[in-house]
Length: 240
Image (cartoon, rainbow, N blue to C red):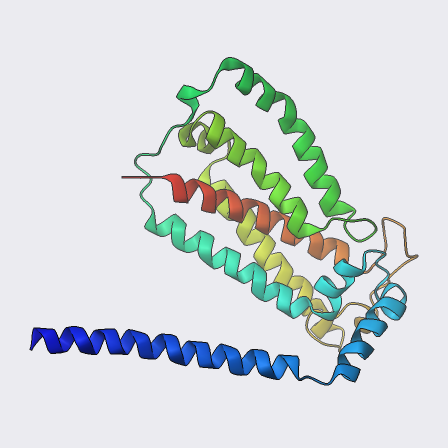
């Protein structure tokens, strides 16, 4: 009977893999056979009308935070979910310490570069709509500050400098702020996460105060991604 159960479990797992593979092949086949004229139209529209409609010089930002902002909200939610689950599941009593094996010169170097990372991350977030950058990449750079503190010194030291509750609060502010900004479009009689369509002033393209809601969404994403990645990294290296 036990052997029969083992065979059934193996067949069940194989069936799941085959079913999932079939689903992916079917999905990719449909994507591949989408109307090419439609795809070319969207690409041409983003390139030719993106700056005028959104006010963002960075067309990647215009797509992420305007045309497809709802998709971006989903991506941000995945990071929020991962950080929340890890923060609850991983024990906090002990943590692996890497700092004891590092020489003093490494620690001094880290102290030297941390302010530059803070400035770079902030710049990428605040100017992501007028230059290469944005909330995601800026948030990643800011998260490196906490990660370097953890690697160079220890988890305890990193979380003494920036408490886990504080990082979770920052992440929550970023996530909630993103949603509230999206609701502004509904309040103006347009759609959720609408920008130019909701008549928010897009300003003069190329200026810092332009692109409507996109700079503010960049800030929220930067806060959420930066705090979320820091939480995930520290949680993953903790051990019982």
